[in-house]
Image 1 (tube, one colour):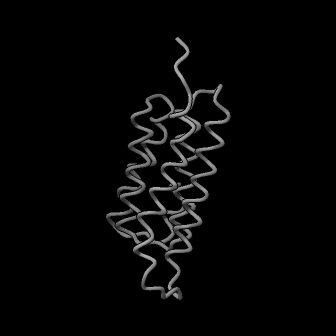
Image 2: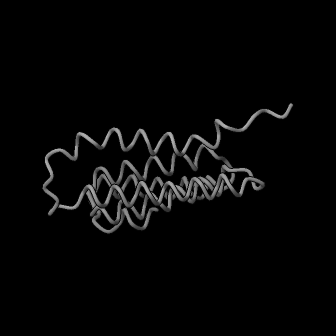
Length: 132
């Protein structure tokens, strides 16, 4: 997650990346620091502007990091669904950001596609009933 944001380092992005690295180590004890590490890495990527593939790899690593830390150990299905949709979001993001693609109506479909992907991601959690 942090290594892919270091491919095109600039001063501000490098500072945020160093803070994110500290948060990763603290995140093994406190989950709020793990979330802060992901947020700092995302901010560093925004400031450094790496290639879309580096951004996707960082996003996949961040998703795997947060799922490994925050998801319950018994929910293998929820982990698999989260990682599957993270990969699909990444593939769609790389496809949309290709510079050779010159389709003027594609930005009109992007919000609908993201809404459908969000609904598909949340659907397993909404269909389960409380077993109290």
